Amino acid sequence: MTRSYDVIVVGGGHAGTEAAAASARLGARTLLITPDLSRVGQMSCNPAIGGVAKGVVVREVDALGGVMGRATDASRIHFRMLNRSKGPAVWSPRAQCDRGLYPRGVRRILDGIEKLDLFQEMITGVWMEGERLGGVVTRGGQRFSAGAVVVTAGTFLRGRIHVGGEAGVPAGRAGEAPSIELAEALEARGLEVARFKTGTPPRVDGRTVDFSRLEVQAGDVNDYRFSAYVDEPIPEQRVCWITWTGEGLRKVVQENLGRSALYGGAISGRGPRYCPSIEDKIVKFPNAPRHQVFLEPEGLETTELYVNGLSTSLPGDVQEAFIHTVPGLEEARITKLGYAIEYDYFPPHQLRHTLEVRSVPGLFFAGQINGTTGYEEAAGQGLVAGANAALKVQGLEGFVLGRDQAYIGVLVDDLVTKGVDEPYRLFTSRAEFRLLLRQDNAPERLGPLAERRGLLLPEQAAALKDRRRRWVEVREWFRSEVLVPETANKVLREAESAEVNRPVRAEELLRRPRVRGESLARAGGAPFAGNDELVAAVELEVKYEGYVRREEDRARRLRDQAGFLLPDDLPYADFVTLSREARDKLVRLRPGNLAQAGRIPGVSPADLQNLVLEVRRARRGVAVDATDEPSQGSPDIL
Image (tube, rainbow, N blue to C red; front, side, top):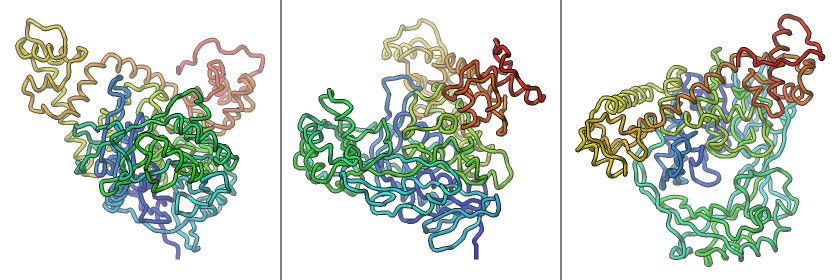
């Protein structure tokens, strides 16, 4: 007997859990299938969430009703706000989590969502009813039917683990079998497939570390939370430590490069440029005298430490040798060897912006299967894919975020319109509208959208309403409160700002550099003094109001471009006024609108102008002659 659902999600990692939760929140009967339910939400590499740009994504996932923010708050044991010394547009929260508490938090949240079932089994393929997706089939031959399927297979698709230069071991991650049949079944559907690699460092027993030789890295003391809707209890906090590699490690690695899986030729897939192995660091940065290493706790009830910065595929004896050259780790005992893993991914130019596979309607991909790296990028994609899978079976309009709305929108647009030639990682520099896409305003800019589209549970919608009410109260206080000189000057002296000799509105003072909103609130006796997060959010809105308005104007022009739609069946190859490169790229990527076409490398402004002409004339059935002069002005939609 075939069990029937609206949406089936394959995989229980960070993409899969967000996809399943989003689908179920939208009211679709959803099934999450994964090989091992005890590993739902597992942190395969570093038990850390957030970081530069990534922390903003976590806040966005939470604002859209997702799981990751709550699970992070419930398991975080070390927190820092990165980039504090820079502008607020690039402030990024990061939390080190307890490796055991995080997945338990994810499972608890999933178990509380109605219309979501979980099932343990390996999926070996999808089955079709004619040209329509029918569902999935398990290794045991059981069939599940669904109107949409989201595949979030992570590194499991034909995955192979490598330690040293010998032949790799088939595995999805350490100790788990790979998914070979599913990879073959997807490739058999005519989808383009390629290989990437990633890796992990060794772990060490903290009882064997000489902490007196390490620099302590304390966490921030404020009560910051990733989740705007639910206040999870924050666990006891821990410190991290910093040390450095030196000439001894360099010598060990250089002498053993031939035994590395990467440099010995055992791996052909390309790895993440921004998270290089220690072999890569030594080879590519030969003049660097040292490299930073972070020792990060794996949990509250273990002494195991994650050695961040020493990712490697060298054999175990070499890992032992180079670990012992690092100050503080001379006597350290390795508890788990580092390894590299090579796996299949499906280049994301084959997807729509809903993350639906163009050639297989109803099939969605999210996470590392799309060539990305990182828990946060996976979670953002999972939410988008799961939401769109549910909306598709319900016959509703797709859920697509713009580049001016969210880092998740930047991520998806980059993947679909530009493709990947290395594992994709988000950075603040990838976003044109960084000042709009701050971590502090994620609930305000995405919460209302999530509520309108049905992505918030009733209790989340109620929490959003309360947060918006409190935000307005804070904003109105600064706008209307007048501080007398005696009160204002105490704050201004602390901020080394010019004093005043007349009563001044708090908002006017807040516009000054170095004057903090919390200081003004406390001095003025504001009822919300002490709510650092909301005050900081309002402070940034006030201080950067002019800059934000200019970015909003630019974003409106981008939306105008997005309004010029490009149908899927446009005969780009026949558009002779476009350059050969532009035609080839447009045929391959098939953007949905002019704004997306403009972000494709190799499509010039002149190509865009002529593309508008070609599309308009194609609609009228008039051919464009190759000798026609290119359009000299901008299209009227620009």
